[in-house]
Length: 211
Image (cartoon, rainbow, N blue to C red; front, side, top):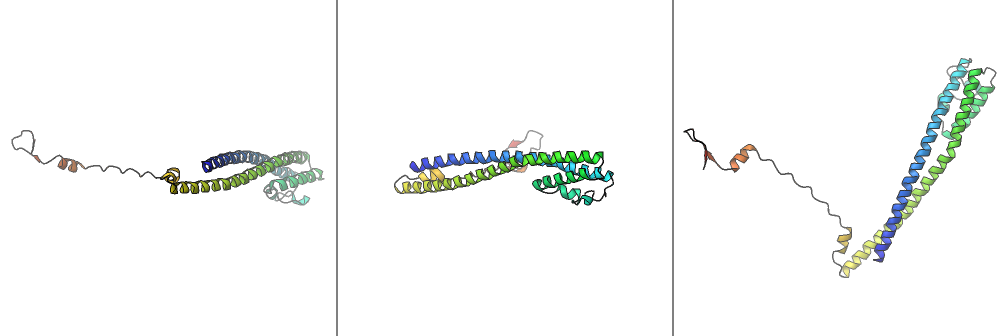
């Protein structure tokens, strides 16, 4: 009984740890989704700035080249944190350029705002991911205790069997898989007819009689 109580307690703790992982995973997913959505806005702002700069005379192949920055597509695919830094620097340089027109300055302001939004959301995502990792580590530790408790309970049941509690181990741990039921074979019409016995067909037009 003491081994079973220890096992039950360990199992309850494991269930709680598993629920903690599910909750942490949901929070991390929500935080990551928010950052991804804000990053999509930032990427749009990067391409909008490139279009505005091209309208002010910058090279269309890479409007950012005169400012010493990578092409828009390269900036947009950078990791979140690196892109926010790069986008902020890029927008500042674009707004200060002598060739910058009204459209370029407006696009640069939007990019700075978009990059700031991503940067502000990153700590929450990092915190959520760290909490998720901690929850998984806790579940793994509790899982080891659960495995030990289960092993001890099995050993205790085996000892009890030796002491006369016959069938205890099987009652606790054996899982009998139910055999699938066989489908009954359908009898053919000819088989059904033969099963009912031979018939004699009369020659005088009266009803058939079973012999």
